[in-house]
Length: 598
Image 1: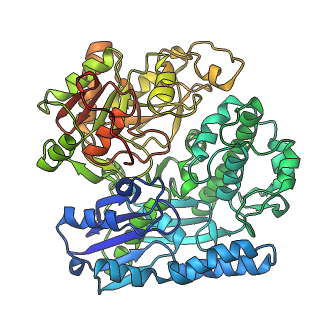
Image 2 (image 1 turned 120 degrees about the horizontal axis):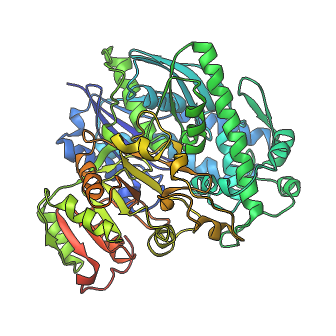
Image 3 (image 1 turned 135 degrees about the vertical axis):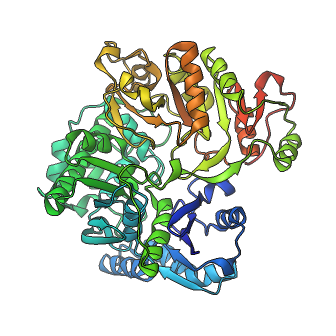
Protein backbone atom coordinates (compact mmCIF):
# COMPACT_ATOMS: atom_id res chain seq x y z
CA UNK A 1 0.00 0.00 0.00
CA UNK A 2 1.49 3.32 -1.11
CA UNK A 3 0.66 6.75 0.34
CA UNK A 4 1.95 9.94 -1.28
CA UNK A 5 1.25 13.43 0.01
CA UNK A 6 1.21 16.27 -2.50
CA UNK A 7 1.75 19.90 -1.45
CA UNK A 8 1.33 23.24 -3.23
CA UNK A 9 2.07 26.53 -1.49
CA UNK A 10 4.05 29.77 -1.28
CA UNK A 11 2.24 31.65 -4.07
CA UNK A 12 -1.52 31.46 -3.66
CA UNK A 13 -4.21 28.88 -2.88
CA UNK A 14 -2.02 26.52 -0.87
CA UNK A 15 -3.30 22.96 -0.68
CA UNK A 16 -2.49 19.38 0.19
CA UNK A 17 -3.65 16.10 -1.33
CA UNK A 18 -3.23 12.44 -0.40
CA UNK A 19 -3.03 9.62 -2.94
CA UNK A 20 -3.32 5.96 -1.94
CA UNK A 21 -2.20 3.46 -4.60
CA UNK A 22 -3.05 6.01 -7.30
CA UNK A 23 -6.48 6.88 -5.86
CA UNK A 24 -7.15 10.42 -4.64
CA UNK A 25 -8.27 10.01 -1.03
CA UNK A 26 -8.40 13.56 0.35
CA UNK A 27 -7.57 17.05 -0.85
CA UNK A 28 -8.08 20.43 0.82
CA UNK A 29 -7.06 24.07 0.52
CA UNK A 30 -5.44 25.86 3.42
CA UNK A 31 -7.76 28.88 3.13
CA UNK A 32 -10.71 26.79 4.24
CA UNK A 33 -9.08 26.28 7.65
CA UNK A 34 -7.37 29.64 8.21
CA UNK A 35 -10.28 31.64 6.69
CA UNK A 36 -7.76 33.74 4.71
CA UNK A 37 -8.88 33.85 1.08
CA UNK A 38 -6.18 32.50 -1.24
CA UNK A 39 -3.90 31.70 1.70
CA UNK A 40 -0.39 31.00 0.40
CA UNK A 41 1.09 29.69 3.65
CA UNK A 42 2.46 26.21 4.13
CA UNK A 43 -0.74 24.12 4.34
CA UNK A 44 -0.15 22.65 7.75
CA UNK A 45 -3.84 22.72 8.73
CA UNK A 46 -4.92 20.99 5.53
CA UNK A 47 -2.17 18.39 5.96
CA UNK A 48 -3.08 17.67 9.58
CA UNK A 49 -6.73 17.24 8.70
CA UNK A 50 -5.93 14.92 5.80
CA UNK A 51 -3.59 12.82 7.91
CA UNK A 52 -6.07 12.63 10.80
CA UNK A 53 -8.93 11.73 8.47
CA UNK A 54 -6.82 8.94 6.97
CA UNK A 55 -5.44 7.87 10.36
CA UNK A 56 -1.86 8.19 9.15
CA UNK A 57 1.42 9.34 10.66
CA UNK A 58 4.27 10.89 8.70
CA UNK A 59 6.15 7.57 8.88
CA UNK A 60 3.31 5.97 6.89
CA UNK A 61 4.02 8.18 3.87
CA UNK A 62 6.07 6.69 1.03
CA UNK A 63 6.87 10.12 -0.38
CA UNK A 64 6.02 13.80 -0.24
CA UNK A 65 5.79 15.66 -3.55
CA UNK A 66 6.04 19.42 -4.03
CA UNK A 67 4.33 21.01 -7.02
CA UNK A 68 7.25 22.94 -8.50
CA UNK A 69 11.02 23.18 -8.70
CA UNK A 70 11.85 26.01 -6.33
CA UNK A 71 15.43 26.34 -7.60
CA UNK A 72 14.32 26.86 -11.19
CA UNK A 73 11.68 29.37 -10.12
CA UNK A 74 14.23 31.36 -8.12
CA UNK A 75 16.56 31.28 -11.13
CA UNK A 76 13.81 32.86 -13.25
CA UNK A 77 13.24 35.62 -10.70
CA UNK A 78 16.98 36.40 -10.50
CA UNK A 79 17.33 36.35 -14.28
CA UNK A 80 14.32 38.56 -14.86
CA UNK A 81 15.30 41.14 -12.26
CA UNK A 82 18.93 41.26 -13.42
CA UNK A 83 17.92 41.80 -17.06
CA UNK A 84 15.62 44.68 -16.11
CA UNK A 85 17.90 46.34 -13.52
CA UNK A 86 17.96 48.99 -12.15
CA UNK A 87 14.19 49.37 -12.63
CA UNK A 88 13.67 46.02 -10.92
CA UNK A 89 15.40 46.96 -7.66
CA UNK A 90 12.15 47.37 -5.62
CA UNK A 91 10.90 44.00 -6.88
CA UNK A 92 14.28 42.41 -6.14
CA UNK A 93 14.34 43.78 -2.59
CA UNK A 94 10.81 42.50 -1.98
CA UNK A 95 11.07 39.04 -3.53
CA UNK A 96 14.64 37.82 -3.01
CA UNK A 97 14.90 38.02 0.82
CA UNK A 98 11.66 36.03 1.09
CA UNK A 99 13.08 33.35 -1.19
CA UNK A 100 16.45 33.16 0.55
CA UNK A 101 14.97 32.92 4.04
CA UNK A 102 11.90 30.80 3.34
CA UNK A 103 10.77 29.60 -0.09
CA UNK A 104 14.02 27.87 -1.09
CA UNK A 105 13.87 25.73 2.05
CA UNK A 106 10.61 23.94 1.40
CA UNK A 107 12.11 20.49 2.00
CA UNK A 108 13.40 21.61 5.37
CA UNK A 109 9.96 23.02 6.19
CA UNK A 110 8.27 19.75 5.18
CA UNK A 111 10.57 17.70 7.39
CA UNK A 112 10.31 20.10 10.33
CA UNK A 113 6.53 20.64 10.23
CA UNK A 114 5.63 17.00 9.63
CA UNK A 115 8.49 15.27 11.43
CA UNK A 116 9.05 13.51 8.12
CA UNK A 117 12.22 11.57 7.26
CA UNK A 118 11.37 10.00 3.89
CA UNK A 119 11.79 11.04 0.24
CA UNK A 120 10.77 14.50 -1.00
CA UNK A 121 10.26 15.00 -4.74
CA UNK A 122 10.07 18.24 -6.69
CA UNK A 123 7.72 18.06 -9.67
CA UNK A 124 7.93 20.98 -12.15
CA UNK A 125 4.97 23.33 -11.93
CA UNK A 126 3.41 22.68 -15.33
CA UNK A 127 4.11 18.96 -15.11
CA UNK A 128 2.09 19.04 -11.87
CA UNK A 129 -0.73 20.80 -13.74
CA UNK A 130 -0.51 18.32 -16.61
CA UNK A 131 -0.53 15.35 -14.22
CA UNK A 132 -3.51 16.78 -12.32
CA UNK A 133 -5.39 16.99 -15.62
CA UNK A 134 -4.52 13.60 -17.09
CA UNK A 135 -4.23 11.07 -14.27
CA UNK A 136 -7.69 11.68 -12.72
CA UNK A 137 -9.32 12.03 -16.16
CA UNK A 138 -11.44 9.20 -17.60
CA UNK A 139 -9.26 8.90 -20.72
CA UNK A 140 -6.70 6.21 -21.51
CA UNK A 141 -4.86 8.73 -23.64
CA UNK A 142 -5.32 12.45 -24.22
CA UNK A 143 -3.71 15.64 -25.42
CA UNK A 144 -2.79 17.96 -22.55
CA UNK A 145 -2.98 21.76 -22.46
CA UNK A 146 -1.90 23.76 -19.39
CA UNK A 147 -2.13 27.56 -19.23
CA UNK A 148 -1.55 29.88 -16.27
CA UNK A 149 0.41 32.95 -15.17
CA UNK A 150 3.83 31.32 -14.80
CA UNK A 151 5.45 28.39 -13.07
CA UNK A 152 9.23 28.15 -13.08
CA UNK A 153 9.59 29.50 -16.65
CA UNK A 154 6.67 27.97 -18.55
CA UNK A 155 3.33 29.77 -18.80
CA UNK A 156 1.74 27.40 -21.34
CA UNK A 157 2.57 23.80 -22.17
CA UNK A 158 1.31 21.24 -24.65
CA UNK A 159 1.78 17.53 -24.14
CA UNK A 160 0.28 14.06 -24.10
CA UNK A 161 -0.85 11.47 -21.59
CA UNK A 162 -0.76 7.78 -22.40
CA UNK A 163 -1.49 5.03 -19.91
CA UNK A 164 0.66 5.80 -16.86
CA UNK A 165 2.88 8.49 -18.38
CA UNK A 166 2.61 12.22 -18.97
CA UNK A 167 4.95 13.99 -21.37
CA UNK A 168 5.29 17.72 -22.04
CA UNK A 169 6.32 18.30 -25.63
CA UNK A 170 6.48 22.09 -25.93
CA UNK A 171 6.14 25.23 -23.83
CA UNK A 172 5.67 28.97 -24.10
CA UNK A 173 7.79 30.71 -21.52
CA UNK A 174 7.69 33.83 -19.36
CA UNK A 175 7.25 36.75 -19.96
CA UNK A 176 4.80 35.63 -22.67
CA UNK A 177 1.84 34.54 -20.57
CA UNK A 178 -1.90 34.49 -21.23
CA UNK A 179 -2.54 34.32 -17.49
CA UNK A 180 -0.49 37.47 -16.85
CA UNK A 181 -2.08 39.22 -19.84
CA UNK A 182 -5.55 38.45 -18.51
CA UNK A 183 -4.53 39.54 -15.02
CA UNK A 184 -3.26 42.87 -16.39
CA UNK A 185 -6.74 43.54 -17.73
CA UNK A 186 -8.24 42.33 -14.45
CA UNK A 187 -6.26 45.06 -12.70
CA UNK A 188 -7.14 47.64 -15.38
CA UNK A 189 -10.88 47.02 -15.02
CA UNK A 190 -10.62 47.46 -11.25
CA UNK A 191 -10.61 43.91 -9.90
CA UNK A 192 -8.09 42.12 -7.71
CA UNK A 193 -5.46 39.98 -9.43
CA UNK A 194 -5.64 36.24 -8.63
CA UNK A 195 -9.17 36.78 -7.34
CA UNK A 196 -11.10 39.00 -9.73
CA UNK A 197 -10.42 37.32 -13.07
CA UNK A 198 -13.78 35.54 -12.94
CA UNK A 199 -15.47 38.89 -12.24
CA UNK A 200 -14.03 40.34 -15.44
CA UNK A 201 -15.09 37.19 -17.29
CA UNK A 202 -18.64 37.71 -15.98
CA UNK A 203 -18.53 41.35 -17.07
CA UNK A 204 -17.40 40.57 -20.63
CA UNK A 205 -20.82 39.59 -22.09
CA UNK A 206 -22.17 43.06 -21.22
CA UNK A 207 -19.70 44.67 -23.64
CA UNK A 208 -18.58 44.59 -27.24
CA UNK A 209 -15.02 43.57 -28.20
CA UNK A 210 -14.24 46.93 -29.82
CA UNK A 211 -10.66 46.91 -28.51
CA UNK A 212 -9.82 43.52 -30.02
CA UNK A 213 -7.83 45.06 -32.89
CA UNK A 214 -5.98 47.36 -30.51
CA UNK A 215 -4.93 44.44 -28.32
CA UNK A 216 -3.85 42.17 -31.19
CA UNK A 217 -1.98 44.96 -33.01
CA UNK A 218 -0.27 46.60 -30.04
CA UNK A 219 -0.15 44.23 -27.05
CA UNK A 220 0.01 40.66 -28.32
CA UNK A 221 1.12 39.08 -31.59
CA UNK A 222 -0.68 35.73 -31.99
CA UNK A 223 0.70 33.09 -34.36
CA UNK A 224 -1.48 30.57 -36.16
CA UNK A 225 -0.31 27.76 -33.88
CA UNK A 226 -1.46 29.65 -30.76
CA UNK A 227 1.95 30.83 -29.61
CA UNK A 228 2.23 34.56 -28.97
CA UNK A 229 4.55 37.39 -27.97
CA UNK A 230 3.58 40.17 -25.56
CA UNK A 231 4.81 43.72 -26.15
CA UNK A 232 6.53 44.48 -22.86
CA UNK A 233 6.33 48.24 -23.44
CA UNK A 234 2.82 48.02 -22.03
CA UNK A 235 3.60 45.91 -18.94
CA UNK A 236 5.65 46.20 -15.77
CA UNK A 237 5.45 42.74 -14.23
CA UNK A 238 8.98 41.78 -15.33
CA UNK A 239 10.53 44.48 -13.18
CA UNK A 240 7.93 46.02 -10.86
CA UNK A 241 5.22 45.13 -8.39
CA UNK A 242 2.64 46.68 -10.74
CA UNK A 243 1.29 44.96 -13.84
CA UNK A 244 0.72 47.69 -16.44
CA UNK A 245 2.71 50.70 -17.62
CA UNK A 246 1.44 54.25 -18.28
CA UNK A 247 1.55 53.37 -21.99
CA UNK A 248 -1.16 50.75 -21.35
CA UNK A 249 -3.54 53.33 -19.91
CA UNK A 250 -2.71 55.79 -22.70
CA UNK A 251 -3.44 53.13 -25.32
CA UNK A 252 -7.00 52.62 -24.07
CA UNK A 253 -7.60 56.25 -23.19
CA UNK A 254 -8.61 55.85 -19.55
CA UNK A 255 -6.88 55.35 -16.22
CA UNK A 256 -7.25 52.00 -14.49
CA UNK A 257 -10.51 51.77 -12.55
CA UNK A 258 -10.09 51.84 -8.80
CA UNK A 259 -12.05 49.54 -6.53
CA UNK A 260 -15.41 51.10 -5.75
CA UNK A 261 -15.52 53.33 -8.82
CA UNK A 262 -18.45 52.86 -11.23
CA UNK A 263 -18.33 50.04 -13.78
CA UNK A 264 -19.20 51.51 -17.16
CA UNK A 265 -19.76 50.32 -20.70
CA UNK A 266 -16.09 51.09 -21.36
CA UNK A 267 -14.99 48.52 -18.79
CA UNK A 268 -17.42 45.96 -20.21
CA UNK A 269 -16.01 46.55 -23.70
CA UNK A 270 -12.44 46.12 -22.44
CA UNK A 271 -13.45 42.86 -20.71
CA UNK A 272 -15.19 41.61 -23.85
CA UNK A 273 -12.10 42.40 -25.94
CA UNK A 274 -9.58 40.54 -23.80
CA UNK A 275 -12.01 37.63 -23.51
CA UNK A 276 -12.14 37.40 -27.31
CA UNK A 277 -8.33 37.41 -27.46
CA UNK A 278 -8.17 34.70 -24.79
CA UNK A 279 -10.70 32.58 -26.67
CA UNK A 280 -8.58 32.83 -29.81
CA UNK A 281 -5.37 31.78 -28.07
CA UNK A 282 -7.04 28.81 -26.38
CA UNK A 283 -8.73 27.63 -29.60
CA UNK A 284 -5.57 27.94 -31.70
CA UNK A 285 -3.54 25.97 -29.15
CA UNK A 286 -6.21 23.29 -29.02
CA UNK A 287 -6.31 23.00 -32.81
CA UNK A 288 -2.51 22.74 -32.94
CA UNK A 289 -2.59 20.01 -30.29
CA UNK A 290 -5.17 18.04 -32.25
CA UNK A 291 -3.09 18.37 -35.41
CA UNK A 292 0.16 17.42 -33.64
CA UNK A 293 -1.10 14.48 -31.59
CA UNK A 294 -4.07 13.16 -33.53
CA UNK A 295 -5.68 12.43 -30.18
CA UNK A 296 -9.44 12.77 -29.87
CA UNK A 297 -9.58 13.75 -26.19
CA UNK A 298 -8.21 16.83 -24.42
CA UNK A 299 -7.47 17.48 -20.74
CA UNK A 300 -6.67 20.89 -19.27
CA UNK A 301 -5.38 22.53 -16.10
CA UNK A 302 -3.77 25.79 -14.97
CA UNK A 303 -5.62 28.89 -13.82
CA UNK A 304 -6.72 29.84 -17.33
CA UNK A 305 -8.53 26.50 -17.59
CA UNK A 306 -11.07 28.00 -15.14
CA UNK A 307 -12.17 30.42 -17.87
CA UNK A 308 -15.54 28.82 -18.51
CA UNK A 309 -16.34 31.07 -21.47
CA UNK A 310 -13.28 29.89 -23.40
CA UNK A 311 -13.98 26.31 -22.30
CA UNK A 312 -17.57 26.47 -23.53
CA UNK A 313 -16.49 27.84 -26.90
CA UNK A 314 -13.77 25.19 -27.18
CA UNK A 315 -16.28 22.44 -26.48
CA UNK A 316 -18.78 23.81 -28.99
CA UNK A 317 -16.14 24.05 -31.73
CA UNK A 318 -15.73 20.27 -31.67
CA UNK A 319 -11.94 20.31 -32.11
CA UNK A 320 -11.79 17.37 -29.72
CA UNK A 321 -14.40 14.67 -29.23
CA UNK A 322 -14.34 15.13 -25.46
CA UNK A 323 -12.73 17.48 -22.94
CA UNK A 324 -12.02 16.97 -19.24
CA UNK A 325 -10.77 19.81 -17.04
CA UNK A 326 -9.30 19.42 -13.56
CA UNK A 327 -11.92 21.03 -11.26
CA UNK A 328 -9.13 22.43 -9.06
CA UNK A 329 -7.32 23.71 -12.14
CA UNK A 330 -5.35 26.43 -10.34
CA UNK A 331 -2.34 26.03 -8.08
CA UNK A 332 -4.31 24.07 -5.49
CA UNK A 333 -4.72 21.25 -7.99
CA UNK A 334 -0.94 21.12 -8.35
CA UNK A 335 -0.89 19.19 -5.07
CA UNK A 336 -2.92 16.41 -6.72
CA UNK A 337 -0.74 16.47 -9.82
CA UNK A 338 2.56 16.38 -7.94
CA UNK A 339 1.41 13.38 -5.88
CA UNK A 340 0.02 11.53 -8.90
CA UNK A 341 3.10 12.13 -11.05
CA UNK A 342 5.36 10.95 -8.25
CA UNK A 343 3.27 7.83 -7.69
CA UNK A 344 3.25 6.69 -11.30
CA UNK A 345 6.88 7.67 -11.90
CA UNK A 346 8.24 5.85 -8.85
CA UNK A 347 5.92 2.85 -8.64
CA UNK A 348 5.61 1.77 -12.26
CA UNK A 349 1.97 0.99 -11.47
CA UNK A 350 -0.60 0.56 -14.20
CA UNK A 351 -3.20 3.30 -14.46
CA UNK A 352 -6.78 2.24 -15.05
CA UNK A 353 -9.22 4.39 -17.01
CA UNK A 354 -12.61 3.34 -18.35
CA UNK A 355 -13.22 6.30 -20.67
CA UNK A 356 -16.29 7.41 -18.68
CA UNK A 357 -15.64 7.97 -14.97
CA UNK A 358 -13.02 10.33 -13.57
CA UNK A 359 -11.05 10.00 -10.34
CA UNK A 360 -12.02 13.27 -8.64
CA UNK A 361 -15.11 11.85 -6.88
CA UNK A 362 -17.17 14.91 -7.70
CA UNK A 363 -14.32 16.95 -6.16
CA UNK A 364 -15.88 16.18 -2.77
CA UNK A 365 -12.53 15.48 -1.12
CA UNK A 366 -12.18 17.92 1.79
CA UNK A 367 -13.25 18.46 5.39
CA UNK A 368 -16.31 16.40 6.34
CA UNK A 369 -19.38 17.62 8.23
CA UNK A 370 -21.09 14.43 9.40
CA UNK A 371 -24.85 14.13 9.91
CA UNK A 372 -24.28 14.47 13.64
CA UNK A 373 -21.25 15.01 15.82
CA UNK A 374 -20.63 16.09 19.38
CA UNK A 375 -17.85 18.53 18.42
CA UNK A 376 -20.15 20.31 15.94
CA UNK A 377 -22.91 20.44 18.54
CA UNK A 378 -20.59 22.07 21.07
CA UNK A 379 -19.22 24.57 18.54
CA UNK A 380 -22.71 25.59 17.42
CA UNK A 381 -23.99 25.89 20.99
CA UNK A 382 -21.06 28.15 21.84
CA UNK A 383 -22.28 30.50 19.10
CA UNK A 384 -25.77 30.60 20.57
CA UNK A 385 -27.29 28.62 17.71
CA UNK A 386 -30.76 27.07 17.80
CA UNK A 387 -31.84 24.22 15.56
CA UNK A 388 -33.98 21.16 15.11
CA UNK A 389 -32.67 17.81 13.96
CA UNK A 390 -34.12 16.39 10.76
CA UNK A 391 -33.63 12.80 9.60
CA UNK A 392 -31.43 12.67 6.51
CA UNK A 393 -34.15 10.93 4.52
CA UNK A 394 -36.53 13.84 5.21
CA UNK A 395 -34.07 16.68 4.67
CA UNK A 396 -34.18 16.91 0.82
CA UNK A 397 -37.96 17.35 0.81
CA UNK A 398 -37.75 20.02 3.55
CA UNK A 399 -35.09 21.92 1.59
CA UNK A 400 -37.09 21.68 -1.65
CA UNK A 401 -40.31 22.83 0.02
CA UNK A 402 -38.68 26.02 1.28
CA UNK A 403 -36.89 26.69 -2.01
CA UNK A 404 -40.22 26.39 -3.85
CA UNK A 405 -41.65 28.96 -1.43
CA UNK A 406 -38.98 31.47 -2.49
CA UNK A 407 -36.62 30.98 0.44
CA UNK A 408 -32.82 30.81 0.29
CA UNK A 409 -31.18 27.76 1.88
CA UNK A 410 -27.55 27.25 2.87
CA UNK A 411 -26.39 23.64 2.55
CA UNK A 412 -23.28 22.40 4.39
CA UNK A 413 -22.90 18.66 4.77
CA UNK A 414 -20.59 15.84 3.70
CA UNK A 415 -17.11 16.50 2.34
CA UNK A 416 -16.11 20.00 1.26
CA UNK A 417 -15.35 20.60 -2.39
CA UNK A 418 -11.72 20.83 -3.53
CA UNK A 419 -11.25 23.77 -5.88
CA UNK A 420 -13.00 27.10 -6.37
CA UNK A 421 -16.50 25.78 -7.19
CA UNK A 422 -19.16 24.84 -4.64
CA UNK A 423 -20.72 21.68 -6.03
CA UNK A 424 -23.48 20.93 -3.54
CA UNK A 425 -21.82 20.21 -0.21
CA UNK A 426 -21.00 23.85 0.65
CA UNK A 427 -23.66 25.63 -1.41
CA UNK A 428 -26.35 28.29 -1.20
CA UNK A 429 -29.46 27.16 -3.09
CA UNK A 430 -32.34 29.23 -4.47
CA UNK A 431 -35.14 29.15 -7.05
CA UNK A 432 -33.82 30.27 -10.46
CA UNK A 433 -37.35 30.94 -11.77
CA UNK A 434 -37.49 34.13 -9.71
CA UNK A 435 -35.97 37.02 -11.71
CA UNK A 436 -35.49 39.09 -8.53
CA UNK A 437 -33.41 36.34 -6.93
CA UNK A 438 -30.25 37.38 -8.82
CA UNK A 439 -30.17 40.82 -7.24
CA UNK A 440 -31.25 39.51 -3.84
CA UNK A 441 -28.43 36.98 -3.74
CA UNK A 442 -25.83 39.43 -5.05
CA UNK A 443 -26.72 42.37 -2.83
CA UNK A 444 -28.17 40.86 0.35
CA UNK A 445 -26.42 37.51 0.73
CA UNK A 446 -23.18 37.46 -1.26
CA UNK A 447 -22.53 41.22 -0.89
CA UNK A 448 -20.96 41.47 -4.33
CA UNK A 449 -21.32 43.26 -7.66
CA UNK A 450 -24.88 43.18 -9.01
CA UNK A 451 -23.89 42.17 -12.54
CA UNK A 452 -22.39 38.87 -11.40
CA UNK A 453 -24.23 35.83 -12.83
CA UNK A 454 -25.22 32.71 -10.93
CA UNK A 455 -24.78 29.13 -12.06
CA UNK A 456 -27.46 26.45 -12.21
CA UNK A 457 -27.43 22.93 -10.88
CA UNK A 458 -29.65 20.66 -12.94
CA UNK A 459 -30.56 16.99 -12.89
CA UNK A 460 -28.17 15.31 -15.30
CA UNK A 461 -31.05 13.56 -17.02
CA UNK A 462 -32.92 16.88 -17.49
CA UNK A 463 -30.05 19.13 -18.61
CA UNK A 464 -30.97 19.04 -22.30
CA UNK A 465 -34.47 20.33 -21.47
CA UNK A 466 -32.97 23.68 -20.49
CA UNK A 467 -29.66 23.93 -22.35
CA UNK A 468 -28.02 23.02 -25.64
CA UNK A 469 -25.85 20.35 -24.08
CA UNK A 470 -24.80 16.84 -24.97
CA UNK A 471 -23.30 14.74 -22.20
CA UNK A 472 -22.58 16.00 -18.71
CA UNK A 473 -20.85 18.89 -16.95
CA UNK A 474 -20.37 17.87 -13.30
CA UNK A 475 -17.76 20.46 -12.33
CA UNK A 476 -19.30 23.76 -13.49
CA UNK A 477 -16.42 24.38 -15.93
CA UNK A 478 -18.26 25.02 -19.19
CA UNK A 479 -20.89 27.47 -20.36
CA UNK A 480 -23.78 26.27 -22.51
CA UNK A 481 -26.52 28.20 -24.34
CA UNK A 482 -30.03 28.27 -22.89
CA UNK A 483 -32.41 26.55 -25.31
CA UNK A 484 -34.07 28.89 -27.81
CA UNK A 485 -37.53 27.76 -26.72
CA UNK A 486 -36.92 29.08 -23.19
CA UNK A 487 -35.53 32.49 -24.13
CA UNK A 488 -37.28 35.81 -23.68
CA UNK A 489 -36.45 38.97 -25.65
CA UNK A 490 -34.59 41.48 -23.51
CA UNK A 491 -32.90 44.76 -24.32
CA UNK A 492 -30.13 46.52 -22.44
CA UNK A 493 -30.68 49.11 -19.73
CA UNK A 494 -28.75 52.27 -18.92
CA UNK A 495 -26.26 50.56 -16.61
CA UNK A 496 -24.58 47.17 -16.42
CA UNK A 497 -26.35 46.41 -13.14
CA UNK A 498 -29.78 47.32 -14.49
CA UNK A 499 -29.18 45.21 -17.58
CA UNK A 500 -28.31 42.23 -15.38
CA UNK A 501 -31.73 42.44 -13.72
CA UNK A 502 -33.68 41.91 -16.96
CA UNK A 503 -35.26 38.46 -17.40
CA UNK A 504 -34.01 36.56 -20.46
CA UNK A 505 -35.66 33.17 -20.03
CA UNK A 506 -38.03 31.21 -17.81
CA UNK A 507 -34.97 30.48 -15.64
CA UNK A 508 -33.89 34.14 -15.48
CA UNK A 509 -31.60 34.09 -12.46
CA UNK A 510 -29.19 31.66 -14.14
CA UNK A 511 -29.42 33.07 -17.68
CA UNK A 512 -26.59 35.49 -18.45
CA UNK A 513 -26.96 38.46 -20.80
CA UNK A 514 -25.64 36.37 -23.71
CA UNK A 515 -28.14 33.57 -22.95
CA UNK A 516 -25.42 31.33 -21.53
CA UNK A 517 -25.14 29.50 -18.22
CA UNK A 518 -22.28 27.85 -16.33
CA UNK A 519 -23.81 24.47 -15.69
CA UNK A 520 -23.36 21.76 -13.10
CA UNK A 521 -25.13 18.54 -13.97
CA UNK A 522 -25.99 16.42 -10.92
CA UNK A 523 -26.00 12.63 -11.04
CA UNK A 524 -27.44 10.19 -8.53
CA UNK A 525 -24.11 8.35 -8.41
CA UNK A 526 -21.84 11.32 -7.55
CA UNK A 527 -24.08 13.32 -5.22
CA UNK A 528 -27.22 11.37 -4.32
CA UNK A 529 -28.34 13.89 -1.67
CA UNK A 530 -28.24 16.87 -4.04
CA UNK A 531 -29.91 14.79 -6.75
CA UNK A 532 -32.71 14.05 -4.28
CA UNK A 533 -33.13 17.77 -3.47
CA UNK A 534 -33.52 18.55 -7.18
CA UNK A 535 -35.92 15.64 -7.64
CA UNK A 536 -38.09 16.85 -4.76
CA UNK A 537 -38.05 20.39 -6.12
CA UNK A 538 -39.12 19.08 -9.53
CA UNK A 539 -42.06 17.26 -7.92
CA UNK A 540 -43.25 20.57 -6.48
CA UNK A 541 -42.54 22.91 -9.41
CA UNK A 542 -41.93 20.86 -12.55
CA UNK A 543 -38.36 22.25 -12.70
CA UNK A 544 -35.35 20.05 -11.91
CA UNK A 545 -33.02 23.03 -11.73
CA UNK A 546 -31.84 25.49 -9.04
CA UNK A 547 -29.35 28.27 -8.41
CA UNK A 548 -26.16 26.96 -6.80
CA UNK A 549 -23.64 29.47 -5.50
CA UNK A 550 -20.82 29.00 -3.04
CA UNK A 551 -21.65 29.14 0.66
CA UNK A 552 -19.72 32.28 1.57
CA UNK A 553 -19.92 36.04 1.34
CA UNK A 554 -17.78 38.23 -0.89
CA UNK A 555 -14.03 38.04 -0.24
CA UNK A 556 -14.39 35.13 2.21
CA UNK A 557 -13.37 31.52 1.56
CA UNK A 558 -16.13 28.96 1.11
CA UNK A 559 -17.32 27.73 4.51
CA UNK A 560 -15.63 24.62 5.80
CA UNK A 561 -16.90 23.62 9.24
CA UNK A 562 -20.37 23.65 10.78
CA UNK A 563 -19.39 26.74 12.77
CA UNK A 564 -18.26 28.54 9.60
CA UNK A 565 -21.60 27.73 7.97
CA UNK A 566 -23.56 29.09 10.93
CA UNK A 567 -21.57 32.32 11.05
CA UNK A 568 -22.17 32.94 7.35
CA UNK A 569 -25.86 32.11 7.80
CA UNK A 570 -26.19 34.71 10.55
CA UNK A 571 -24.23 37.43 8.73
CA UNK A 572 -26.31 37.30 5.58
CA UNK A 573 -29.97 37.10 4.61
CA UNK A 574 -30.01 33.33 4.08
CA UNK A 575 -33.42 32.18 5.36
CA UNK A 576 -32.62 28.61 6.37
CA UNK A 577 -29.53 26.45 6.68
CA UNK A 578 -29.08 22.68 6.62
CA UNK A 579 -25.80 21.96 8.41
CA UNK A 580 -25.22 18.24 8.75
CA UNK A 581 -28.62 16.95 9.86
CA UNK A 582 -29.44 20.17 11.72
CA UNK A 583 -32.06 22.63 10.40
CA UNK A 584 -31.62 26.32 11.23
CA UNK A 585 -34.41 28.87 10.86
CA UNK A 586 -33.21 32.50 10.88
CA UNK A 587 -36.36 33.59 12.71
CA UNK A 588 -35.72 31.06 15.46
CA UNK A 589 -32.25 32.39 16.31
CA UNK A 590 -32.09 34.37 19.53
CA UNK A 591 -28.37 35.13 19.49
CA UNK A 592 -26.94 38.11 17.63
CA UNK A 593 -24.82 37.54 14.55
CA UNK A 594 -21.36 36.33 15.64
CA UNK A 595 -18.86 39.17 15.79
CA UNK A 596 -15.18 39.23 14.91
CA UNK A 597 -13.26 37.09 12.47
CA UNK A 598 -14.00 33.69 11.08
